[in-house]
Length: 575
DNA sequence: GCCGTTTTCGGCCCGACTGTTTTCAGTCG
Figure 1 (cartoon, rainbow, N blue to C red):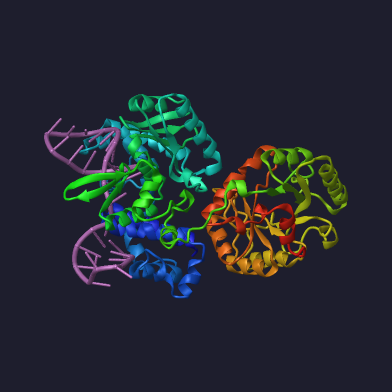
Figure 2: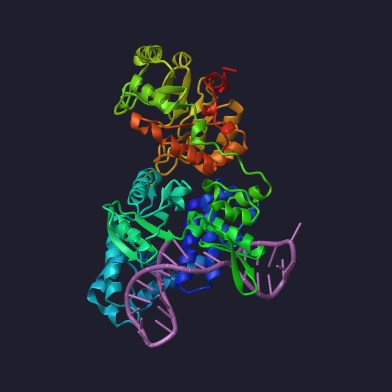
């Protein structure tokens, strides 16, 4: 079993316990453990073998045993017992907006409901009206929620929602009804996927601002609408919340709703130790029974109150950022303006849409000092892959474009396919003519773990390969990452001075943040590249930089922050 | 179930909104 599978069972355990109305803190313990394991970069099997399971925060004796049994036998006694009481299919019901554990318990125990289909039928039969606490509106809303769930039951890609969030923010500001407005939640933490869109605002006319928000053209359904808060579902199917708060609470509210939940709980606990109460309205000092407000206008007030420097939203996952803040060891995170070049770009020489010159001009407008054109060298026909025969013309075309344009350097590069056996689609004689060689897998992505690891290692051993593109080949919400032994990969990368890519395209974001952090800790250099196939996509760089920040990367960890000369020098065999 | 620079027991974040209620339970974030 892998980390994801273990996490899933822990989540399911928590869900079942919740329906059984177990102790809330016990439920949370399972959920917290699940989250931690989900975020772990290292294989839980390896951690268990070393006997370090209980060293993971949030995992004690009980859950450690639970996990060990799962790893050894594929299941465990406790989980089997729970499943007998509440079958897993019942848990699907919890995904429906408006259905929590209490209602699901009634549905399952009194009506034997264990699927959405059965629930729909029951709701339409109006038998639930006889149950205390269930009225007509509940029925109607649940039917609507089931419809929405069936249509959009997934998290959304950050890259798809980010522009929408900016658009709505802009409209709110333009309305004249709000003074300050900010997107918070997982979007502000730049998580690779987002579940909903949280906006905070201050306003002199809260009711009118709420009204305006619920009437935006992007709104499809209103779930709740009060005097300070509205909750809607947008056309795309994603939920959006607007909360209007008082100016003096704005910082505290932005902080609170940015999360993550785990991070917030840590901060509040630190506050409690100092006799402070920290909530979305501000920071309050307890004086007898009274609470005296001591801050909350600015977000940094919160951190200051618990003796911490401001922690960047991207780090707020309770993955060591609080300890790092306390010991003054927070990283000086890389930022978008540090990026000097984009070294993974496609043109109409393979499957890109624009010419070399067009891409270079667009990159120059962004302010880059250099780019590398890296079209596909692949046998795949649909990608219009470069075969050895076309390479001379291709390199010449890049050199010509470079001569034509001033103010930006165009490097001649390639994204060459790594074949199943780890050799490359182009011979070394051609590779050595290029300024920069990016190698990547594009076929046979589901090999056994060992073979895949060896395949990438062999590519890294090639003296002409500078960079491994999108190392795991995952597509978020679409394709699982290839199975690799990441520890071996980073070890070899360090040995051979091969750079690992953080692919900035929001469907890839590959390496992910945890892998980037591990690579950094091992002294492996990385590069953030867009893989742009059109000039409009050069600006996905911001998602790549955000991912790097989530991986605690600093400027010095990322080679395309270097000026051209030093950049070329760090490529292996150029030193 | 987890955790501990006061604690191995007793805490563990908390307010807004909805629907069905005569004062609150359930859900959500």
